[in-house]
Image (cartoon, rainbow, N blue to C red; front, side, top):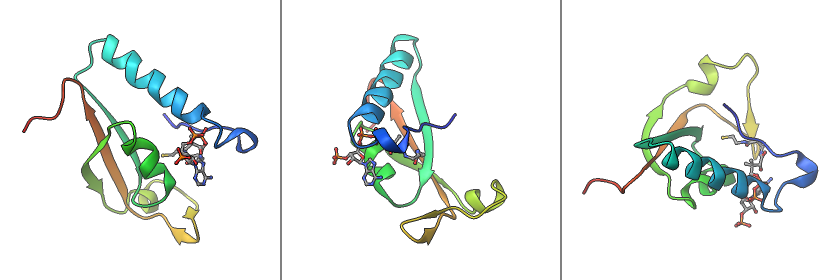
Length: 93
Ligand SMILES: CC(C)(COP(=O)(O)OP(=O)(O)OC[C@H]1O[C@@H](n2cnc3c(N)ncnc32)[C@H](O)[C@@H]1OP(=O)(O)O)[C@@H](O)C(=O)NCCC(=O)NCCS
């Protein structure tokens, strides 16, 4: 699933509130980990890492292979996708 906040309402805390709700929901549901995918740069990366997500993998060429149109962020084409994971109960050492 994708997460998005209407542009008129971005940067007012709604996205963070949604993400925290999702993290909490799956923890209570008994999940052992939660994984998301995002671009390799941009504010979205900080958005997830601030909540405790850590980089666990990279899907090279993901945005080229899976989208008909090129996607640009900050004038740079998105090519690879980072996988980020929260492990409930903490990351193993
Ligand atoms: C990512 C998204 C869901 C975050 O929702 P939001 O309501 O704007 O998030 P918040 O208000 O909780 O802000 C979270 C942080 O992101 C930053 N941020 C949000 N939008 C930003 C933008 N357009 N440019 C730069 N920083 C931005 C905020 O400043 C904040 O950082 P701070 O705490 O250092 O101030 C929203 O920006 C969005 O819909 N983006 C477009 C779709 C998208 O990229 N989805 C994620 C795909 S992986």
